[in-house]
Image (cartoon, rainbow, N blue to C red; front, side):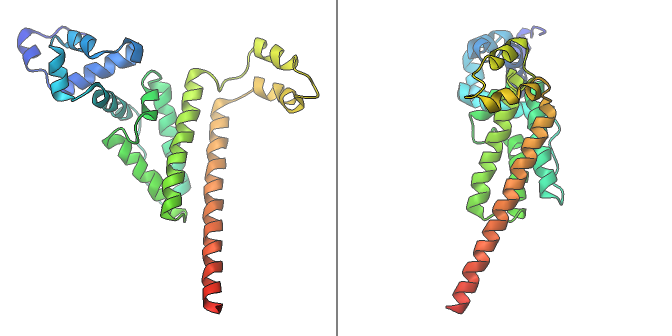
Length: 229
């Protein structure tokens, strides 16, 4: 990073701080990040950073939201299923692009403006699917928990084809007690993370549609019961 001259150091603004913080965190992860180290890179006192960002947590939240600007944010369409798939794909891309930053998205209900754009799409999709507001809120958050967890697991290497050592360990399991596990060894060796992600999203979406159908059916039954009572 190019050193800032004395005059620029005194006039460092909030955006410059955020961009430097983002670069530091993306390169070194949370273990290598600190307000003091960031201030040293910028050539300012740590209190200058805290003047613009009231706490380290506020800065970390801004870093997470800034990362979303590096991926394509979906645009709502007329198809709620397509909208959920698009949001899922964008967060998976985020995990691939910024693996050291991605875990911050588990820490906050929303990271800021960019995050709110996608959450609006998700909540609208849940309501257009036919869910009541209480269900839309709960399943909307569950959707995020699912895609964030899946994407992080993939970024950390869990969702990958198993290697020789893993295969040997599974094949050494008792064939009676672990019949299903051993029968899947070949499939686990040939695992396609992208296909697994798409299939999982489709299963979640199918569950949302079924939940909406059941809710509508129950509401109709109650309505008919009230009429005949």
